[in-house]
Structures are given as structure tokens and as C-alpha cells.
Image (cartoon, rainbow, N blue to C red; front, side):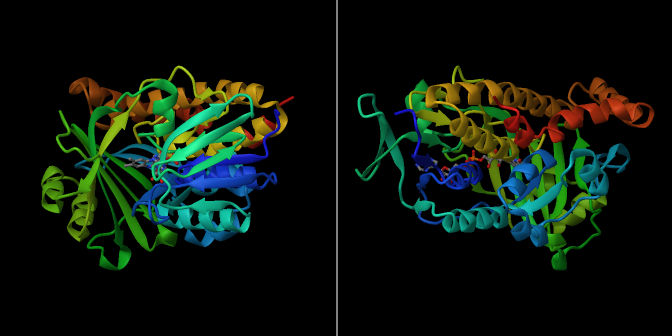
Length: 402
Ligand SMILES: Cc1cc2nc3c(=O)[nH]c(=O)nc-3n(C[C@H](O)[C@H](O)[C@H](O)COP(=O)(O)OP(=O)(O)OC[C@H]3O[C@@H](n4cnc5c(N)ncnc54)[C@H](O)[C@@H]3O)c2cc1C
């Protein structure tokens, strides 16, 4: 009765698909219910740091992803106008040497497609147009029953809520509570290199400026450049959390910035605008035979580029806990292992908003200068911060589990 043979995953995002694949690789029967009519990801880039790449490698996805990846030379923070470097941390060969896996940039659609193919090959059943409405725990049958909005029902030994920041599964488990607007919006877009009107450095680049920042990096083997332009706002009036962005408004918001930024925006033809939302730490991530992962339980500002990485780590650790322990104990272990790390990275992401946006006027600039000096005089201090994030190895951690 404690054995888990059949798993249902709500949500076919990156976290849900990684979980489905991890469980399918253990020989479990896995069904993924996705509300959308098509399996797709948004047209944007994704930084996949070594800690997440170790999981993708363990799941056997590196051969399919390698030619789609771009390996950035450095992680840099630069002044929005002068281009002066506040930080330059080497990533390419150094990241692989230091962390045991490379740092990659991928197009989200590429990673998503590779995950879908791997899931299908591993025997996962993917059901589209399958919006989850609620679940019912059947204590006597030791099952959880999932009810879809169209009335269909499905049963399993375990339900994984990987249904994102507006998770229905989370809402039923912990009550209805809207995500909080974090006072930031993000424009995103990808530009083919053939259409670029300027040279872009091959780095993971953050351009820091007052009240806003700009991120640029190559994806899809260097054929495209991805940009994310973040601006502080008092409110978000639209009902939707994502809408078509106005490219002129975007250019206006970043006018007067360094030629690499303005040149990139001149080349952009299309953009979407996102409201960045968050949640306080949840009291729990599981209840009975139901458990949460990814943005469903720890949405975060994208200023550490770790949201998907955390969902990928969650997925692997959850599957390993369930393989090793009776279910109730497994879910407890999973939460104990994952919650402190995800919460810490949520906090670090929030703190980066202050740094990237020069918050506090002169004080903000002093903080960036201090980072610059530390990078030159005491690089080990900066490195130690990154080591804790990128050096984490959930595969090794799980091998140590009793
Ligand atoms: C601007 C920006 C830049 C980012 N950059 C990075 C980065 O570089 N690196 C990084 O690691 N992270 C990054 N992130 C964070 C990352 O995008 C998210 O953390 C990650 O996509 C979360 O994955 P998920 O699978 O948990 O949720 P989601 O991707 O939200 O997937 C949830 C899925 O569930 C489905 N769903 C929802 N409700 C239901 C329902 N009721 N029934 C069935 N299906 C449902 C949805 O349709 C969706 O397919 C960024 C985020 C933003 C906003």
C-alpha cells in the first residue's frame, strides 16, 4: 500500500516533464495531464546552470541537447551606460572544471521538445486539453483520484502538482491565495543573429541600471540572442499575467543605454510582457498522496536564473525519495531536503533586484562598487556564493540517502 506504481503529474512544464521522466525511468506508470491543447514552451531563453545540468545529464538528455546549447564565456554585470564591468566570472571551461558540469544557454522550446520526446520514448502518457479541477484522496483504497475540468477522472498512487505559479493542486492543498505582484515586469524576446544590428558579447550579461536591468545571451547554438528587460512598476493593471508587449515602449524604457542594449532592441521586432509574481514560503509541500514541485510551491523572481533549475532538482529528488522510502516518509524527506534550498534561492533572487536596479541611490552604486572590488581582491568570496548554487549535486546527495 505504500508502494508507488502509478503517478499522475499535473502540468507539462519543464518541472512536470522532468518528474515524469525520472519516475518513468524507474519503471513506474506515468500520466501527465496538461491543460493546453499543444505541448509547447514560450519563445524565450533559459540559463541552465551546472546544478540543473547534472540532472539532465543523469536523465540521458545531454546528447540531444548538446548541439542546441550555447556555452557562455563569462557571467558578467555591467554598467547600463558605460559598459564598465562590475563582475566578470568565467563560465565556459572553468564552470565545467569547478562544478563537474557545464553552464548552458538553451531555447526553452528546445529543452521542452527534448523532454517531451524522452518522456514519450520512456512510455509516459501525455494527455492534452486536460485541465485539473480537483483531487480526492481515498484513504481506504490508498489512491488519489484526479478530476479534470471536463469531468474525466483518473486514479494513481501519487499526484504531483507541477502546475506552475497558479497551481490548482496547491490551491486545494493550502487554500486560495493569489500570487503577489513583485513590483517588476519583464519584456522577453529572441532575435535571430542574422538580423542583429550590433555585436553582442558571448556572455551571460546583466546590464544594471537605476530601477531596471537588461539581460542578454545567445541561445540555440549561437543562432539567436535572448533578451529579458526588467522594469520596476507600481502595479499591474491587466487581468492576464502575460500580454503582447509594445516594442516602442520597451525601446523608450531603455533609451540612452549602452549601444549593445540599444542595438539589440533596435533589432527586436516582437516582445511579450510578463508580470513577475511570487509567494511567501508555503507551510507544507505535501498532503497525503499529493505533492508539489517547481513554481507550484516556490515561484521566484528570475534574478538568479534558478526557477527552472530548482524545478529540475525537485523532480529528481522527489523520484529518488519515493524510490527509497515508504510514501509518507518519502514526501517528508523530499520537503526537508528541498524547501530550505528553494527558499534560500528565492531570497537571493529577491536581493539581486536591489543590486541590479541600483536601489537606494548612492548606496546601490556603492554595493556594485563593493562587488567590483571583491571580484578583484577577494574572488573567493564571490565564488563561494556561486559555489553553493551551482556546485550543488542532487545526484550525489541522493546516493547518500540511507
Ligand atoms: C523572465 C523570466 C526568465 C527566467 N529565466 C530563467 C532561467 O534563465 N533559468 C531558470 O532556471 N529559470 C528561469 N525562469 C524561471 C522558470 O521559467 C520557471 O521557474 C519554470 O518554468 C517553472 O517550471 P514549472 O514546470 O514549475 O512551471 P511552469 O513552467 O509554469 O509549467 C506549469 C505547467 O502546468 C500547466 N498547468 C497549469 N495549470 C494547470 C491545470 N489546472 N491543469 C493542467 N495543467 C496545468 C501549464 O499550462 C504549464 O504547462 C525565468 C522566469 C521568467 C519569468
